[in-house]
Length: 424
Image 1 (cartoon, one colour):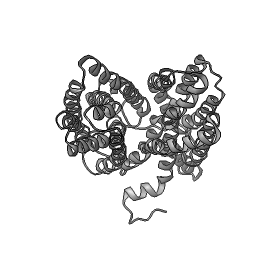
Image 2 (image 1 turned 90 degrees about the horizontal axis):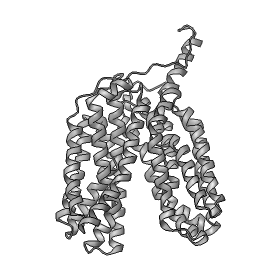
Image 3 (image 1 turned 60 degrees about the vertical axis):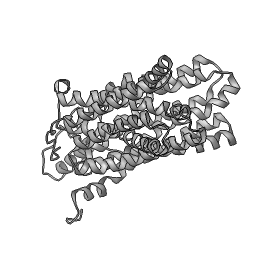
Image 4 (image 1 turned 180 degrees about the horizontal axis):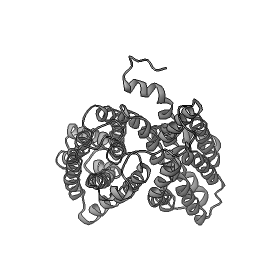
């Protein structure tokens, strides 16, 4: 029994903390291969004579496949639930990672393995974990979602030293095996025990009611959730504003993230100092997820989201005019890292608020695909600007304007409907 003196948020955490643990671990496993690709470039290049272009093509292939399949994954989750999609996905993704240990030097094999990885790993991307968490948490949804999505930051921090140890001590083939079986095996066990979503919880309650004689026997697997239909979502101006803002800000901030190191070094910052400064952005991203989660739970979400994403414009502006001033550079990197760490978080939170849970998987799947597409376009856009104009100034100007516009689009969104007791 819950303590009657506990707040609704405390009651949510006592009942569902294990779900957040499972979802965070699941999302971290999705990031393992992408975070470890750089570690395998040297050994694979030496053994097979492959170029860095070929070796770096793998994550791009997987990202494109994920983007194409994202909306279909969302529809599967809406139909069958996050658990029934994610658990088989964890098994298939683990097997896919293990298959990389069988590489024999064929470039076609390399491309094929990444195509397979992209196809199966879409089942464990952010859509599955976000759907499970936002469907169960209401009063503390922002913090729960922030901790869930922090799983990818954990992987990005832990995988490089762990993977490097495995490769150095046991070889690159064993590295793939242990990353797949070790991380994937632990994740599967935890998710088998603790992963569920609102559909599972409601069906469980209806079974209990039926067994207790409070309800006639029925098909308890059919649980109606509130929210927009797909057709309604296509016509909803708030959903469109969120999608456009999400795409613009993701494209610009990812372009900045990838080119941040050369921006700093070309401005005269030495490589060692530049590497430490870029690392600070990652730390700020973790802080951004947690702080923004708390703020989303306490204040009007679209205002918090708009101000946070719009703040990224300050980073571009400071880098444009203050690149040789250490204090301004530091502020710019912290601001960009903080804002960049919240994009997926804010998008998931606001999608649940404005679209409800009826077709959340499909709608958020489209949002997730847009984020993947934007993340791929941003670095190319920054590179094109540099190649054609000789510096990044025009890109920084575009980033200043674009992020400010993205923030205003979010702020302009109306209060969202009350989908089961939570208003925006």
